[in-house]
Length: 374
Image 1: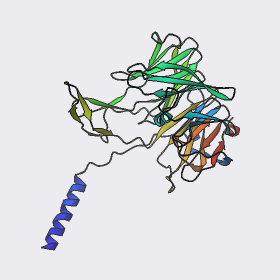
Image 2 (image 1 turned 135 degrees about the horizontal axis):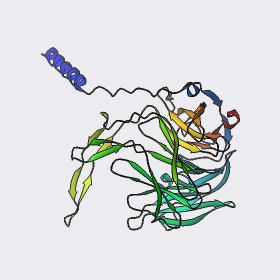
Image 3 (image 1 turned 30 degrees about the vertical axis):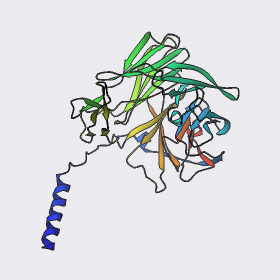
Image 4 (image 1 turned 180 degrees about the vertical axis):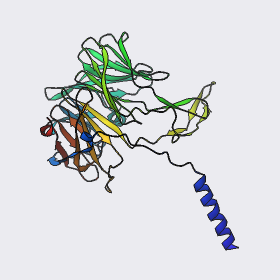
């Protein structure tokens, strides 16, 4: 009897296993030889004051901003090249000038000296701009959050870039920093992909990440090993200048799974959605971060061959392009770092900074790519 039960359970287990959908096969995008032949860049350790569990790192011109809710000050700012401590600021709290810890997770680059955080209030959500100048950080202005649109920043003085997801694409808007109501120009990214939910709505995948700097906008995609480049002139005109990588975007993906939520009454005839989640596996080949310089553009590249280290970090692969999207060189940062969250690149000097919270406490690893570029 026990044997019968055992073999019955075994048969059910095998049946369940084979009934499951086969994993989606991924065909790697064929990289050109110039990016296959990577040059290894050794790491140099730089001693810094302790970085406690950094949650976000952004490169604002020559400044590297580290956000951490574990530190006494939310933000620590370092100058580059050299990663020298410049200033720390940002008290935790709920006052008008304080920061909730979540604010440290929403650092955005506005221009070469200014960054912003999103102040999440129900009535008046706003982007708070902070300027780094003369050894201090000062509040510059608040920009109201516009419904349905997200601010990117100012790649050209006096011009702001915003984005909005439309019915079938991702749209980039330019406007004056003084007149945000008037659209100067628009550009659309490549079409988005969709998957139907059980309730009939659609889940959008492949929404691009947007980067900017030095008069350019760069888009990288969650499901494609691709970078698209746009120029922005002093009048706000947006022009597509080139791109690199995969264009094989399909409308549906078999590896997207959706758990439906439930509509729960909140009283007075108002209902809200509770629970529900959409899961999607990112592409094994993609650009997880982009840094734009006046001469070169650096793409942090995730690929299949990435060795996941037992201590939690990764090897960082960097693809370097010119400002038209032509590949120039590929680098392997030869150290264990967490990326993209704990990796920044100072694009003018070609210096990368990496950090691994599990093995590094008082040191940041620096990598010199600039001296190896033409």
